[in-house]
Image 1 (spheres, one colour):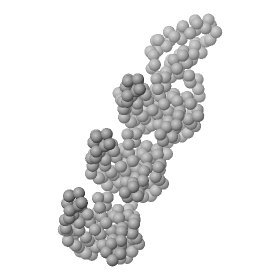
Image 2 (cartoon, rainbow, N blue to C red):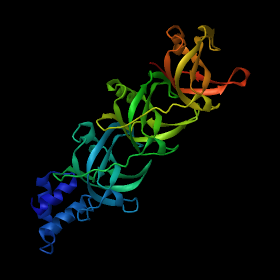
Image 3 (cartoon, rainbow, N blue to C red):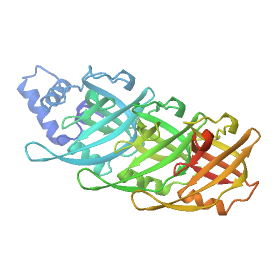
Image 4 (cartoon, one colour):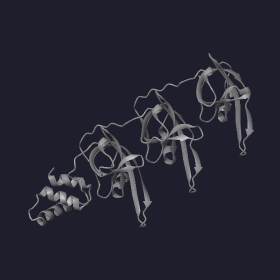
Length: 374
């Protein structure tokens, strides 16, 4: 590769290589022999708005918003969708995102207009190694790179080792962003529809994942719920670029999967073991999982909600070596009372504890609860 082609490749296809070479020749003549061909090529690149053709290649861990223009090489680890928007001048713009990584970390790229079309046309795929020149700035969840009209993103033959910072579930806290986590798929909820403020219809669904440190609920919005169609219980799931938020109803931290997040199946090995609490240790106001034998069965009854719909409830008792507890089964769980027998071994997972009749602690098994009959 000659030096003109080397510099041209950093332009990201702004003009054809033939036109670029013509401009370089014109620049050499214009400078009356005061610069060599390489310098002329760099000057032409500068005239085209690419000012960093000679900058040193840096690692992702060293990129900060204060640097501004940066050159680096990285591997594509996630590709997100492209959306259109209306500019103030009435034209339609396009923007897309991807995540890239090297052996020192990962960073988000934002591609605009023609560069975004590379994603729309699937010309950039996960696993591609890229030479990248863009502008570093503060983004929604940390430093990101803008690739605009004069930015550069080209494939390279370099082999790039990748390191993605990954969290354990027990370390996830409310307000955290850029969450990368893997877990065993424990549960998939039904998809619900709702009315958006703009009058459109939205969709939301949940899954539950666990690793060796705990478990956490994951909320998926709109088209992201479709990713659950290819998943099965006990699959290992990888989440990239999620964010954590407290659920005001359950008062538990959940991972949110939005437009710029990825959820996919992975072959990674993740260990998960349910933590069962002895019945004697249960106190009101927490979520618990218990294991024991059915020691009492109530009757199924229906009742009318305030909104006019009908619901069902039944009660059972479960005992272990430490004690006995009453469990209220709501909704479809209530039907289990007709399938259970005394001494049936049962697991009740993620039931909420509260003070019940005579201030005795009891469990409530709602739609977030899983029940396994063994």
